[in-house]
Image 1: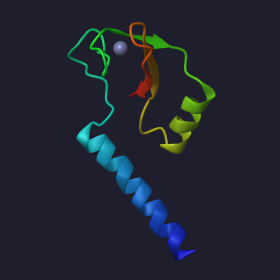
Image 2: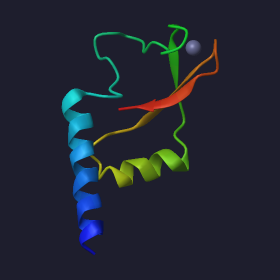
Image 3: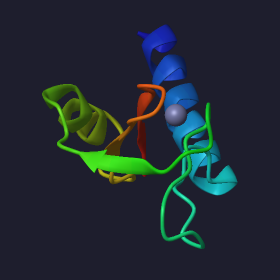
Length: 79
Ligand SMILES: [Zn+2]
């Protein structure tokens, strides 16, 4: 039980660090997001059920959006 609590607290801390450091955050200064692989423009695509689970798992702290790149087929989520 104690292990579970430690794991949960660690998980919460990790979420706070992501929020603080703005990891995986979409850059609001740019009109288009840039692909991390080929630096081309990313397009918003429909969220999958998996992304909705992520939103739940992160306690609605992040609004995950799914993007993909038409040049190199990169796909990922940002908030
Ligand atoms: Zn790309």
